Amino acid sequence: MKKFEDEMNTLIEDTVEMGKLASIMIENSVKALSEGNTELAEDTSKKYTRIAQLDSLIENDALRILMLYQPMALDMRVVATILKIITYLERIGKYSKNIAKAAIFLSTTPSVYSMDGIPTMGEAATKMVKDVVLAFENRDISKLHDYSERDSFLDRMRKEILRENMVQIHENPSSVDACIYYISVSRYIERVGDHSCKIAEKVTYMVTGKHVEID
Image 1 (tube, rainbow, N blue to C red):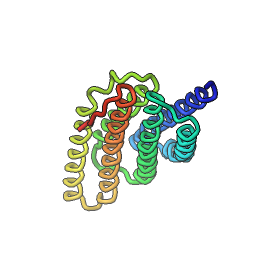
Image 2 (tube, rainbow, N blue to C red):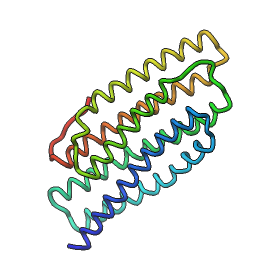
Image 3 (cartoon, rainbow, N blue to C red):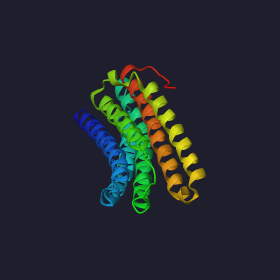
Image 4 (cartoon, rainbow, N blue to C red):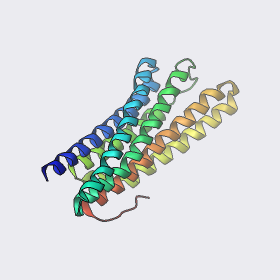
C-alpha cells in the first residue's frame, strides 16, 4: 500500500503545482498588461508549456491509479476531483496566455483612457484561483463560501468594461483594435472566475462528499 500512498501524494503534489502555476500566470499576465511589460508577458506565455505538460502527466497518472489500485471512498473522490480540475486549470492557463499576448500587442498601442477595471478584475480572479488551490491542497473549504459573490463581481466588472469600450469606440473609432483587446481580456478574466467556481464545486465534493452548484 505504500506504493499507492506515494503515487497518490505525487498526484496531489503535481496538481497543486499546476494550480499554483495557473495562479501565477493569471496574476502576471494582468500585471504585464497593466505595466506594458512585454518581457513579463513573454515569460508568462511560455509557462503554458508546463501547464500543458502537467495536464497530460496528471491525467495519465490518475487513470493509472484508478486501473491499478481501484481506490475507495475518499481516495476515489480525490482522484475524480483531480481529473476534473486539471481541465479547468489548463483553461485558466490558456486564458492567461491569451492575456499575455494581448499585453504584448497593447504595449505598442497606448490607451487614450484609463482601464483601471482590468487590474481590479485580475486581482479578484487571481485570489479566486489561489484560494481554491489552497483549499484543495489543505482540504479546507472555509474560504470558498463566497465564490458566488466573487463571480458576480467579475460579471459586473466585465459588463462595465464592455460598456466603457463601446463608448470609446463610438467616440474614437481609431481605438477599435485596442478596445477589442480590452473587451477580450475582460472576458478571459471573467472566465477564469467561472473556472475557479467549477474547481470550488469539485473541491467541496472531494472534502464533503456533497455536490454543490455555485451560481
